[in-house]
Image 1 (cartoon, rainbow, N blue to C red):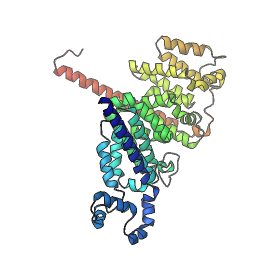
Image 2 (image 1 turned 120 degrees about the horizontal axis):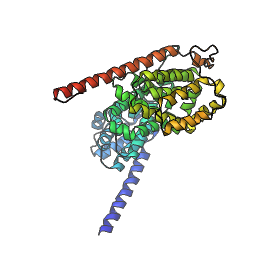
Image 3 (image 1 turned 30 degrees about the vertical axis):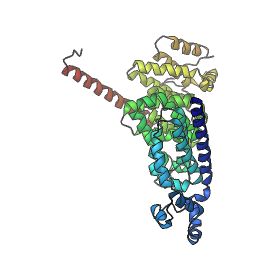
Image 4 (image 1 turned 90 degrees about the vertical axis):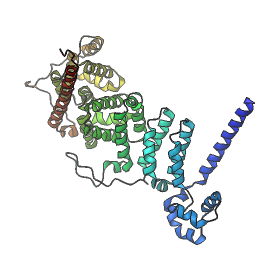
Length: 444
């Protein structure tokens, strides 16, 4: 009896898959709005299309006028509104297979009838954004793929609002999102993602890296990092901004999906890459160690050494030392092979040597200290460390787009962000002392 039941369930599942596949085959690109508009006159003369007849038969009404009045925007017979209602109902189903089926249908409709489905995108998109929080990786991955298709679709409305011009960059006729083929849903997606991470720290901790890496794989990694950086720069949640920057920096320095982006930042050979560096730098300032790692990645050694010299004015905490420790481990990774090879020409890279010695001096004597110390001991013909008063100080960076960067402005911005963090920390300490005092606890 049990075996019969299992066979019956399997048979029903196979039949359902077959019916589902055939239903999908019924939907073609001819159902999209553009083709429908081209055939509007022909449709009126014939009364109704074959698919309209299908809707009438399914409804068993024979009242064609009633069916048309109920779906005024869907004269082709594709009951998109009804389908969207079903999608919204079952996308929150507990079964993974059901959610996958819903996402497959949405993907199919987006591929076959993009203009038609975008008429209902304001209803669909919020549900897809919520699905990013799903517990199963399969659903999240499929959802991210679908979101990526939506934000890149040419059927989506283009953001016509111009972005404010960046320093040294002329005003453009459209936003950079449009240049990359993105529509207005891209910005909505990025903002919602940051809001979700801020409100759900467990999601950020366990799946944040996975979500961001997959988005970088599906979309333009440069544009994602620029967008997230600009959002975080405006954030008033300093602690969240710090945590987010550390995660983004770790992904940037370790993930294979960001290989091309790392190369852009390493060379800074174009105005666009220099602009991206400045954009990331201003946000990376929420994490001083991450800022130094960005400068080392971009071979801006002189500025890296300047930042490290400022660390003496910062509060050295356990978390700070942990970040330094992680940076040293990264310096020994394949990502920074080119940087280690530059030590063979130490006389040409004195600020790199100074930066690494600065990091060494920040570390307590430990295993990490020994690792970096041994690396520096391998440097041939160790040059004298450059100082401000050196008569024969080395020349600055020769890369033209790097020379155009306003380093003083970036340095001042770094100081401003550190002051904000310092004030916030003192406010929290005073609030904690006040609570202890109110509870009658010893605050000493």
